[in-house]
Figure 1: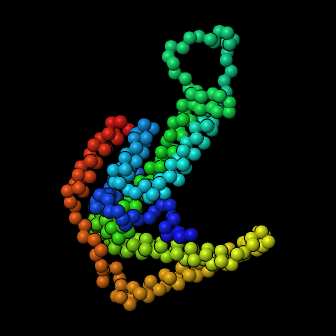
Figure 2: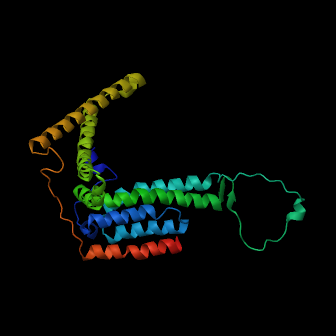
Figure 3: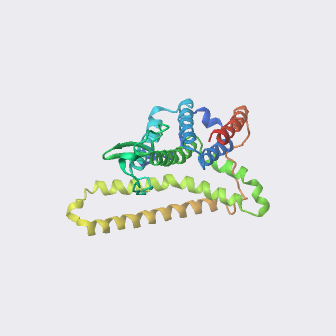
Length: 289
């Protein structure tokens, strides 16, 4: 088992280099915030449009099918499961009413074909409210997770921190430590593969010992896992100390000294086109959404 390759979300795709990779990280961050803010207080139709836009964007970027299936397959299954559960459960409007007239007097022709209950076949019962609620929750889960995942998939960690530092530059006037924040974010992003590597090594060490968990029982199994967690924390603290010593040796005594610029950010033609597309996007959001 290789956690560094089998992790279903949050990995950076180095190759092939798509046109999404070439966009400025600041532009992609603005579009990410647009996809995260656009579903707020909007109707179900607009949320379905946003889901379609993300899928079309993925197809246009020509991301490999193996990555697309690994990144989106489980998320689509989760969204469909949430939609079915929400649509089939009671909608919360469990108001019981008793007619004041006889049933024979209530059988009047309806002026329209409107019906609050869409499906009433035991045990299936779907109303307009439960259907709308299912669409809202499932699309919100898909948009929040996949838009962020697509951003991480096509943006290197150093580009993310460089873009954030540039966008947060005006906050220096309020004496906010922008450089310290971005440096901490860079180190945390670089530390994630080390955590996965330590977890992977511990799991492999347990598998090689062929422990019979049934004979151990629940109490002894918990004791073994507590030892594993303790060893994991010890290894991670040792790795963090090694990184700190290495930074001090190389002169990283403060964030403003011995700084390394990984990327020179500059907007090109494609970036300006992507920024221009925000205007019709938000116009459609306020008119249709």
